[in-house]
Image (cartoon, rainbow, N blue to C red):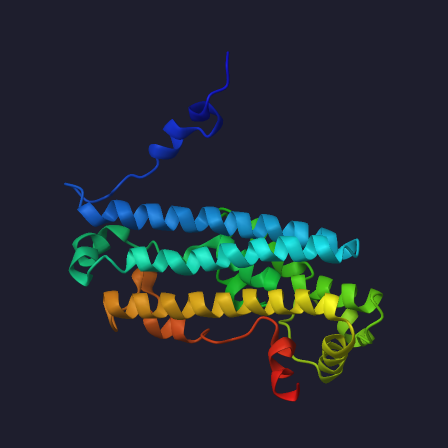
Length: 260
């Protein structure tokens, strides 16, 4: 049988998974579902590209890393841009079906937790709050236990002759990434002496900035949609989201800006 576009992409299955819970269906619930399903697909792609980036870093392939980081940056930009579409939904439109979400919440996105952990934002308390048996929990645990993208980056720099301290290279990877003075000195020398690697540093900064921008847009989206209400699933809503605003994933890359 000839393979078709429809079969290859499983279009019928794809179009069958948008199922509004409101009855009769509220118009904007379909938009809400599609946007969040699309987010999960982009998270999957971002993590897929991160796998590739870490492999390329391990093999010291600078230009391969640069190409893949560019794609990760564009995925992050796409995540931010999708907020524009959600913002066409008014607070009254959201309220019309919000109660149908019951205890479902974006806080429960396991792929986003994996993304955070793999970028270095490790939090044991958050992992403990995920009950056994939740889909993808094993992958969240694996991401918590594994080295981060920044750990792979530090190893890459060390093999390129940068003076990365042993305490950084051999750190406990279950702990969150913390700024380090010696790493900052090494990064400054890279900017001054190794312009090819500088391209990678700027792309990592772009991705970090993109994630911070997405967090900000997410906060403002929630604030304009639900105000100070408690979030679905019982979270603190906007106040919970604000706690992670402007937290850099690559703090050393930001710390050196004032020293250049």
